[in-house]
Image (cartoon, rainbow, N blue to C red; front, side):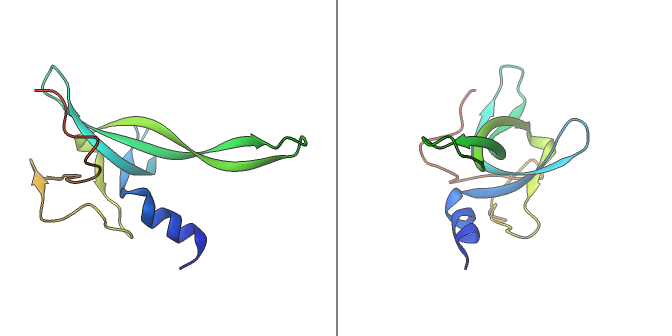
Length: 108
């Protein structure tokens, strides 16, 4: 396993999110939230490119976790990593049960 794959394995539960414009994005699930209107959302981190500047002025591209919220209907298990547990389903969708104990289901 190379360093990139090792990092991905330690990041958490991977999923595939469909964005409002139809694009798909790999995300790390960090929790679920139920809004006051009853909708369920996945709280996720998208690893997006960011500029890192060293003290000597050199810059490089790095990955930065960026929080996003994804409606439950727009999230699916990751096709290759498949880390969302298949034994836990919620309304026909995969649930990120145990994603991180520090980020429990919130809301009503």
